[in-house]
Image 1 (cartoon, rainbow, N blue to C red):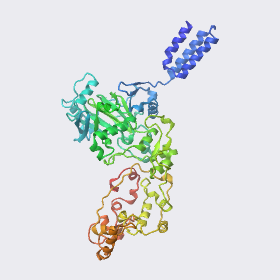
Image 2: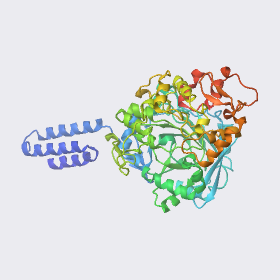
Image 3: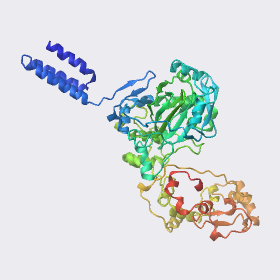
Image 4: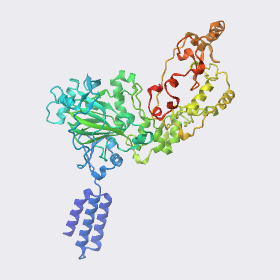
Length: 620
């Protein structure tokens, strides 16, 4: 009878015990049977052991989760586990949630982000869009047409009207079929990307507006807030409003909380299927791929799950109900639609595991408002052992740096990334971007460096000593701006300039966004001929003949208005008047002239922290 009681107790407790606890109980069972079986105190000892096991079990934090029917993990934490957001996300990944692209989190019942939503009727939806979908057979393009602003009450009235309300359905599977059958009909309104939050400031746990992840370090250290990335956005949806296949900006994490309303249905891909989707999308939308290599970041491509499955891409699915969270993981493609009137709040966040994804995130270069984050800050702060190698590789022409970490969930992220290099090229190495001694003095002019106005002036002064003297003409000169000067002369000239020193630590950690300005320069005919005849040693015979012909044209040697050299009194850049596009025939007083940048913006503001982080229109 005693054996039966003990065995049944083990059976009841075993499913919820740690493996080590279960092993210890069985070892204790063997000890009691061998030493105390005939003892009168056996029942007492057995009761004490069982009581100890139950106490330990009740004190153990229960991290309960289950698999949703659509193949996504759903977590239900206790309030104690819910308090530390970053720790819980790490636990989710430890359980493998990131392998499915997204995960669902049901918060504890005692957590409440807002007591009442009765007062949000006057919230203004400033930029609602009408969603137009074109295509057929599961392959569609989504176009957003901006409409005039309206309040939430007006939006809700439209969403519940006969024109926009959802059809009758018995279950979500039926509603999903009706969505794909009627996706191209009617044009719903979507109140997306509205800056703001509905979470009360007193809420400390999982407050979307302040999650306190490493992405918020930008705000703490640099005072930079990127709307929708490290600040909250609101989304007001109605039936059939959709979001196309995409990953987050810079392949960040995202969190989405459904405050109230109809469910939101999500589709997701495992990160390892991301390249498959990209290849398939390029084949289905070739014109978009020709215009932009990262066109999926436009959030315009909608592909049905059936199309993806036909191309061997496994699609996961999960339904987000009112009061539930959805977490998307780095490089996890996702899409979905709303089943009716609802309101959601979302933002991005980051962890140390994301840094390696951020290094490889693709960029859309055709949209100026695309979010771009320079990873130097994160690598130097959170991966200091990789900083030197990463910096040298990034700003050199060496082969791409690779990491054998858990980008696709193949290894535990806690092990940390391991640096390796491709072996397809013989004798690869990470080269120092500074090739020789005299260029080292100007290494601070690299686009990754903090802006140094004094160093820029010094370089402009050196450039003006070349043969062409004009920095624009030097673009068309093979050896510009130093043609006619040997290395000793260049070294001597550069040593005479006042250049401030730069430590390696100060390089490249200030800016989070680098914008390359492209300019099309149309030179006057006289200057085009001037640049064509002042060639290098490898000039053609035609150019030699042009040079002899040009010597017989005295008009080119005249100091006409176009050929007048002017120097900016602030930055010391020297240009031909015609090259720079200065209009007018009268000569300019060279001592008072300023270039466009220096005249429109104060010199001390050119290198400010704000300009280092974002593309300032006044600097372009």
